[in-house]
Image (cartoon, rainbow, N blue to C red; front, side):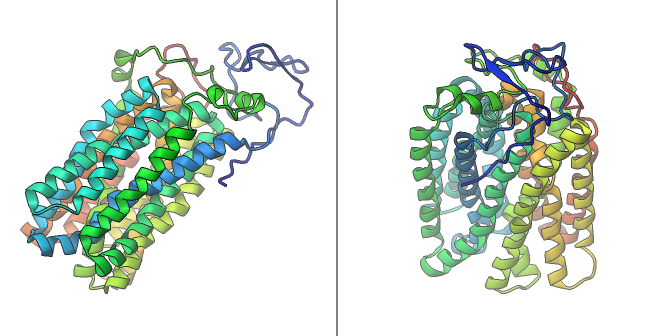
Length: 477
């Protein structure tokens, strides 16, 4: 079971009395505390001990996190398996490097175009129904990838696959906005994205093993079947509102709602003017463009680069293709705890923005260093460390939009992930063009390093202490 440890409570005795509204907490012994956790005249400081009594880790939200973790595993298994199978697909279907780049980018284009609609659908209808439908959709098209007979059919199938998978992480963000308080969102995102990196880590060696044993077509059928099981279990167990879940306790509900007003039943409205007029939205999108651009090299061309350029064997290529995701998974968890710790002790700007800027700039330096005249193993390790450095900020990337627009987290993260995946759509094409036109992988890495640096600078323009929702006071930090 995935555990979320409760943050230590205050050292002085604190008595909680619950009115008929289970979200209304009264602190009878400390007059400095607000009588309600969302009292705008006494905003809860993020740097102080929690104003809710120390609670054991909640079993219901642990299971929500476990579902999100497994979804991330499935998402990246289905997404990354094509990169490992790419050399075999190219040989079988007689595709060039540039044509395979088009296949990769077809997924990313559809993914980008569908992010905001899928995210808004989750805000309005709830992640329970929306995630069930989209996971079934993309699992079907993962299986159909094995039926492709040429470039056109492969591009069409991957486009439709991308359209389905687009809503996964915006709907998880919407889930987290309802099920986790601010002080736990970084850790929740870090653990969830650990699942994505485990999926990415397992995908390359698993796909190579399946391809060599049964062929590349059968590998997609195997990967796609896993998502169907997840979708059924999710629909049966999950509830969109914590207070609707039959296993929810009053204490855990109070913990979840400690620093925000109780989630409302959505009236279908989205404050488009406030969202589109927010500088935060554009800064977050610019930041995540840099992250997505760099990330998609690992999803698409890394196995080919390792095997055909650095001349690793199939086994060696599989190991070094998995290494970035192993290190990134460790960084995701560490970064989740780090962003929450810095947010509590130093404020939101330090915990989210300064951490993100430092991580992205370090990543840019490591990508650049991989182009130097060094042994192949050193190049592979530097590229693995670069992804881990960027992923140290991944929990902060996804926590910041939830901090800024918790009631519209699906739309906010949908915009963010759209621009991230537009970067991901461009990246494989830049690599393919650089290799075919100038026979230069180094040029592609130079561009990647510059884009990561751009994302690092964009972090400094984000202000997570200024929420977009009109009825919320500024947050401390």
